[in-house]
Length: 567
Image 1 (tube, rainbow, N blue to C red):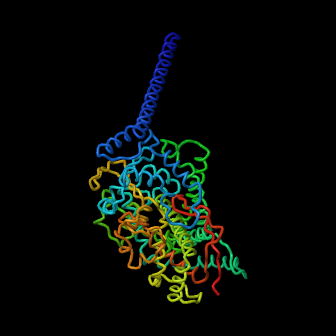
Image 2 (tube, one colour; image 1 turned 180 degrees about the vertical axis):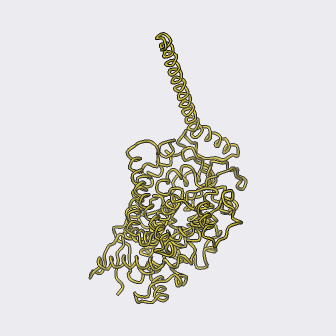
Image 3 (cartoon, helix red, strand yellow; image 1 turned 180 degrees about the horizontal axis):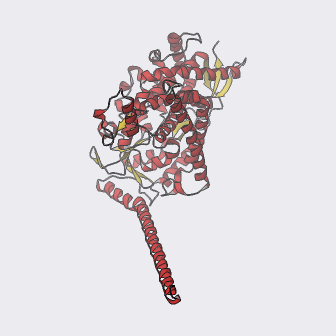
């Protein structure tokens, strides 16, 4: 037996070692915690002070002028005050000189500093550029990987857009664009025209019940067209999963409104991780929406894998799944040179070692992107087009006569993708609508690396800020009637509509242009042609002209028109 004195000594040394070890562990944890805190503080200081200071010095060095920014918030307070003053009242009548209302800070600062100046959104500088040749360079193929979306914009939209093609940057964007672009080729989109006509027929049936025997009926077409475009995107994107698609649309709409409601907190570091009531609600909505998307995607994949269907389908999700299933091999894992493509074993070998071009999360992000962009953009275009036609009956009659000439007067003669190019006048009206009321009144391109633009140095971390609306209403480019509705501008095409072909950019241009613009324009022609053949419409006395921006340009109080059936 071990003497009690020795046993107590061993026990004492053992407990001392344990205590020492515990103290050492606590000390290490304390050091790690301190390092994490220091690292976090450095990130915050770098974000809100050091990097903005460096960028501000770069702006001053090249003589770039602009309104003086405040620490952390930049010119945000002045921007909000100017916007609040302008948006407090309506415009009175259906006037199209909306630049002062929509971009009051731009009109104020451009008078003081000229058309080229810099202002700050929180800690990010915005370099204003309006020269078409400089814009051409920013949008060019050689700069496609050098410019992208800013940190603030990504954070603001991450919950309802994710990291899809609209928000991605650099090589990630290029890869997504290559995979997605074929799904929006005109030959693929032609197959979706039938869905668009079917959904529009349902809207017309609803209006038929409302009109009844009355000569005229007042309708808020903004609300109805919004639901129509939601139906179309739900059908064209998800096909047979339409009902689930509608639920996703409702969740996305709520998520978008909630996110924008608290967007002014997005520039605060770590704000999206705080357990606030709105963050909890955002997380809940996002989780429900992504669970629905996963179900739809997995169900489609399962049906193909067991052979119940031969392809992923012709809706946008099916086209995207088909494009994304091309696989990229890691040559360290599999020797592709020695693979027999007809061998079942080798096919299994490829699939086990090669990764799909898109993960499920990436496909979900693209679905969210298409749902938002395909719905919001087209709903706005259709709404503004109907308002402009309601206020300009002579152009409405011209468009209607063209529709009758091309499609005939019988309801069963539905518009088809192959005949839409013949609707020249309607195309001119749509182009003029996009000029006066572009979906995005501003386009920004964030510098992912130091760049040279003309004689300007664009440092990494700054953004080129392009006021699309200002360029679309510039009298130097469009003439003294720039604020008037004149579709005849586009009679010779978009390139000859004004003094510079790059002054018109409703969908941007270059490699990062809107991938879905062909889809949107096809849908707009189909819907408007079917409505024009069935109804005349004029502005209702209750309509109040008050454009606002909620990601896209839209009428604040709806778009009330008086519908009258054509007998």
